[in-house]
Length: 139
Image 1 (cartoon, one colour):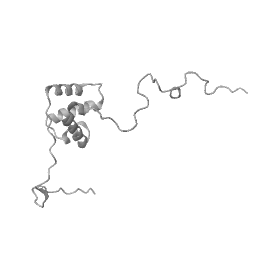
Image 2 (cartoon, one colour):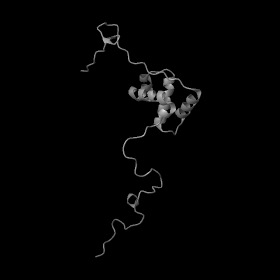
Image 3 (cartoon, helix red, strand yellow):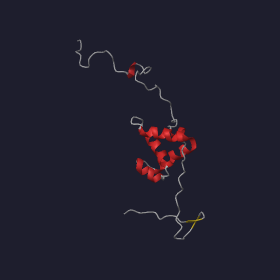
Image 4 (cartoon, helix red, strand yellow):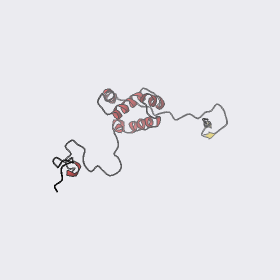
């Protein structure tokens, strides 16, 4: 059986027993966009070959600027309301720069990514020449 926690009641920040004073969730931060920010976000949101995370974040901010709640945005973009709030806050604090991924903790990559695999050493590449796996043995 599913158990539901009862809501907390507040009167000026103090728990109360009054039935009509339900605690409300914090109102999401209001987002206002400049014309330049709006055009950039609309451009990214319309890209077909952009990384999904970038398109999703651009749409998130555009929905927030229209006045939608975190829960509504989360339902539209198939993500949690907590993550919507996080990206909304990062945009408010750092604007478009806040939508980029932050540096990751930990040891940096040993080899830079790339097609040519320079600097990775012979041991990481498939052998160019060598004897076949089932070559006859001498002896």
